[in-house]
Image 1: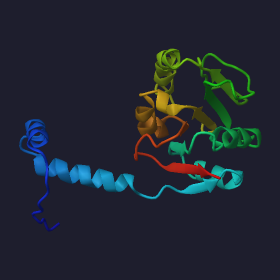
Image 2: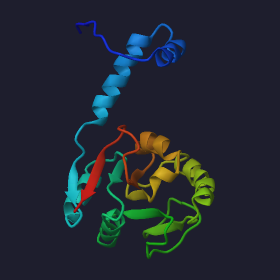
Image 3: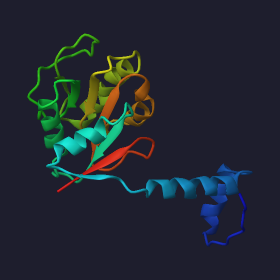
Image 4: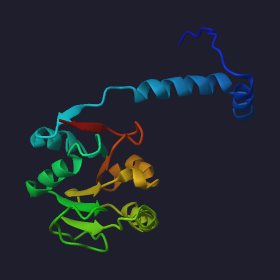
Length: 193
């Protein structure tokens, strides 16, 4: 790779702080930040909220975790509910914090579930954040059957979801539902009108 010197403007205080943190690797870190920014700009596939079959194909095209993103009220949850209703091949375990899924409720994730179910999370954000780590550790503690799919509504609430999206492919299929992508470390699909 051929390197070129480039000039850019930055205030003295910001540059001083940057150099104090990345003393001998400032150029390398700047390259990493630029590359990460460019990767984040990659086009996110868009799927119409009424095209449930296309959405299902995107979600289950492989075993990798996936982020289902879109504006508030666009229909992400409605799409997921339709997929669950019409998919007898998967056992969905939904982290439901708005009481939107009409599924049997469970307290513990086991490897012998025969039907889709939900874990009713508290509506209050701080209470939900406090409970989620218990399940997060459980999800990363064992391999689950290949037909399991974990759906995490309001995934942006839980800081640990980023780790789960990076590691989950080893344990279970994960579908994180949120407004904005949590990162570019796994595929993203945007639901649109």
